[in-house]
Length: 113
Length: 117
Image (cartoon, rainbow over all chains, first blue to last red):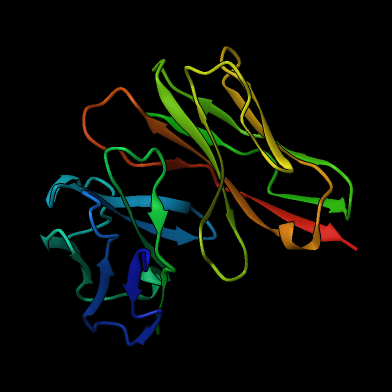
């Protein structure tokens, strides 16, 4: 299995631009999580989906952030407009009913200048 | 809401020695899972070890073992015979097993482990 696949691995963008991060979960997994990692706040949950349905988006910092999961094999996290304080590593993770742990992608390092 | 606390931002250990990383958590639940993840410089999150709360026996994976104290809500990780490749950020994480459907992991802030040759 290829594991959780995130793209791009690195993204540098200018303040005010739209940024879209992509995630392909492991085939057969029915839950997907988006996390943000910063030095100050560690790993924070942004949103998660079960069976493509958003369950909890209380971690999404502002209306500038949105996430979708149109099907079981794809999810996006969009930031519009981006700001320098959004600079972080964004992780996608997936799991399924018979796993206890979550499986993580390689993360996307976002830099907003 | 559950919280996870790692009180040691940084630790160091001599190669071949043993080191223990601390983790405490706060929950009102009785059924849950606990994990230790390793994050090397590559950024990849790697599961090191897991513990089911209903199991009294401490989990062990080769050189890695845990000391799970449910009453004290403590979950420490012991690394024996430390190797240079163990140098990484280590995260303690909690996951509820009482809520229907899959639930997310709640992470501590991490402990950066250095291994000295």
